[in-house]
Length: 474
Image 1 (cartoon, rainbow, N blue to C red):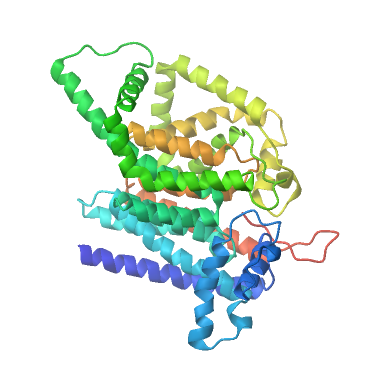
Image 2 (image 1 turned 90 degrees about the horizontal axis):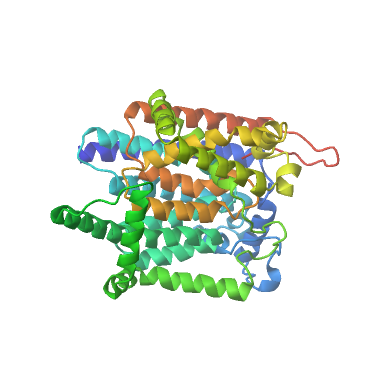
């Protein structure tokens, strides 16, 4: 069975790479000049490729660290030595974009290894489910689209997934080092390095929590009763656990590589005067709480075969009726957060090349009340996501939702790209869905990708004051 799974994996990877190469060829023919953010990334990478690494050569409009450019030079430069290609060829737009296609192959393999590590392997059917899950996430529309442009998404995903994999195997020094590489691609990736540390801490807390529950069961201690009793028990346990020097020292010995990385990040922020480098005017942090609701909706849309079903809706409505006071409070709090903390970035309103422009214009901007009417959908989506993660421990969920909150809420701009990493981490950790749902999910992703690429390559337009060709994209 393992050998058969290997054949399936090789076939899936080969077919995906072949299709990607054909699409890459179509992109290269249609898009011979830098597009969107490439106008900053590609010239900077070409300067690095020519050996100009000085700060005076840095484009101040770039807000991320030079990880993408350094790795690109490390990949394309040896080609000039091995094949004797000229600098004009190895530093060309096509060659630099191809680096992300190579990252996409690495991401496919890492996703497969992560599914093998995270999901049980005691069922024959799980082999097909793992392959289908890997293939589905590899062609996840937003991530897959940016494999063909010179953006940081593919490399950022590669190093973050690699760090997570090493964390799962207990190689925490390597995980922290890879987390640093991910940070060099995008500063907010430090959150997912912290998540790796949180995963280790959650494991130890879960072990101690199970021991505590078993001890109370044997001693037949009376359970804590009343509203939020489970929350109070966990909080009490955490307070007692954190008061033990032995526990804290054990956690420190396990997570010191991540702590060291955290100190390095704090030093960077102190020296740089903030997390963003370059142009900070368009990347101001704020408490944009509805970003969390947008992520819930985004996840519900792209994982609807797993999160949206008559059974799920029925279970949700039953729970709402059973705990109507709690759900009323949650809904009122959500309405308040939407009312007081909704921000609209200038780019969201000004750039009609992004799909988010049309989502905002036709859903949120058309009717003021719409953002409040969607609150029940947010509540359902959040509950459905939490319900799908109930196989994970309460401490793992706590770590994940803290990292999710930290990675989304400070962002003022509604940008689907910011949801890619938390979505993939979420999707990796839910139980393997039935094959029929995976086929449905994969089919939907293929349709969305086909439409996205068709619109991008064929449905071009021009602005009234510009001769440049514009295209619709994520």
